[in-house]
Length: 457
Image 1: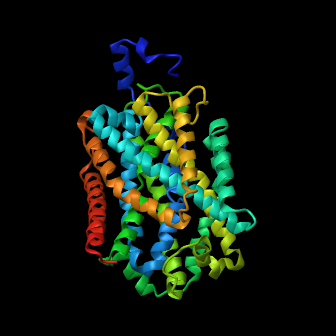
Image 2: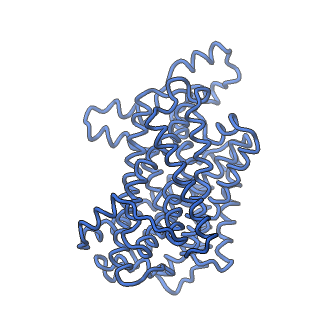
Image 3: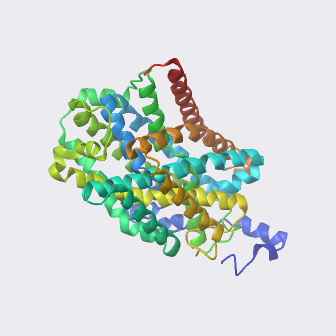
């Protein structure tokens, strides 16, 4: 049943209530329930959560984790384990908002918070996303130059921008995903390299389970950057909208999308957990690999893509730069549309515009103009002489400062019976992990600024 064939406005209050009382389960749930084989059922459960988790290892994440390993060795390895339950729960809460309300995060923020709160939240997210998208485009340019030196990075940046906009506006994000998702498999080179390196198992286990916090501005900046690139603001909006888009593609109107079954929420948690697990395995491998290679050799500050790529040489040898570059290109081309798309979704929902990557330009002009403008601004950032490696790390720090503000709003929403209903509010454990994540991110940011003010390097 489509919204066009059955306009909600034409329904009587009784008809609306009847539709609301009948929960139409999410496509992922329906597909999983139809499969009896447990392994096949698991793969049918995977959907929006896996896509979001995979996009979390974008160029900003790759460079941030590389910088962490190079600068402090194994000292930040514990963050890979700590952020797994944190990120899984936060992504699940965003999924829950989309499944239970049938609307994107910006719509729910608009309905439940004063306008100034909405504008601040969307403004912070839009700024962070645009800068992050620009840094990703810069990374793509640096990667192309790394593979083929005659092509200067700024020409590659322009080319990548034009290509991505053409595909997004004239094609679809699904096309981008099909083209570039295979390149992201190059990130598994870090996993293979990690296995090939023979480190001290005792030290690795200690670094993995016992936090080693150094009270310096450099260390705390890396910590905030890790949290910011792992628990990123753009993922909150993107995850919620992906859940809604899945149901829209299944033909469900706004009323039919309201409400979620226990199986919907259970499968969403599995889906989100699988995506975050993949992302954090790569994160662990990057920190470990760069610690065992770059840090061990005395390279503590990554200033070029070539330096970052050298961490793969123990396994990739002369192909290290190519594999690293393919990873940047693949993740950059996948994540940039996610960044500008999540900003476009949020702005369109707040303004009441039609939105969706499944719509054409003429059907959602405001949505696509936001994507075009954000992408072009991101491209322009690269022409003010900003080092792409430092820009990628810097955007992660910005995300780390902004994320807890948005997390506060998400925690309030998912704890509200008015928004979620009596039986869908956060359970005690979910609430504990969600608020703990929010508090940890606030404390990390505050500690970073305090130590900077004290002048401790």
